[in-house]
Length: 264
Image (cartoon, rainbow, N blue to C red; front, side, top):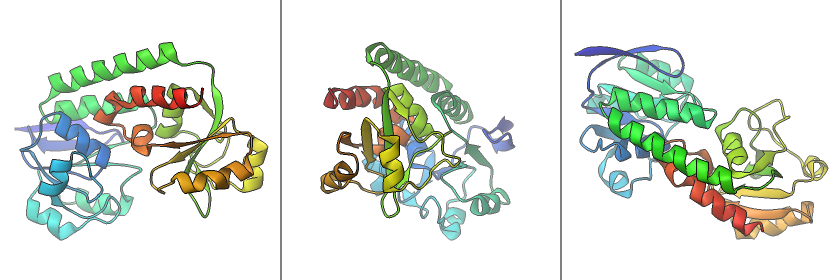
């Protein structure tokens, strides 16, 4: 039967419910679909949907998050496509909307992530599993809240040459706050601003977080940042825990607690 669902961009999406042929265009939401038990229903994922490993090696890949293969998508005959405003290209999403039901998430904080999980649970006929997952995630974040200390001034780097950091109104910035960091770059006018060495020195962060994605920062980059900010603590972090807003949130608080232990 046809049912209407409103997505996080405020658009009404009419689908045959429950959907039987789902394509996911976002890695963190692909992992969520797996956690909700939709192995038979999910028919297509992107080449960046690396979790779970068994899906990465068995599901049809339909291109990248920003470079979709429309012929492969058409061959899969999806009755629902799930994407994200930030991670997918607007023009490509609009093209898909001409042919298929497309439900879009738009996530800037933990509450909106919970809204997405709840909505996808309802859309996919997995409401009970989605509700249980949200409750479990909330409990883990409550434990983290009880254990974290005062806020540490931090800069979270996502790119090198040029240096790019996480700014205001981003999911990563919200995760930083949950972890116990004050994002010193929130005052920047753009969400992912470039920052110079001189600017970074002026911000004088207590902590510099070097993410594993999208740029793969590694141990060889630590000395580079230590030279710019000799007093700062430089930490390599797993970007999936800071930026994935699906079921990976369940283990994110425990990971954040480990990061805080490293800084003691």
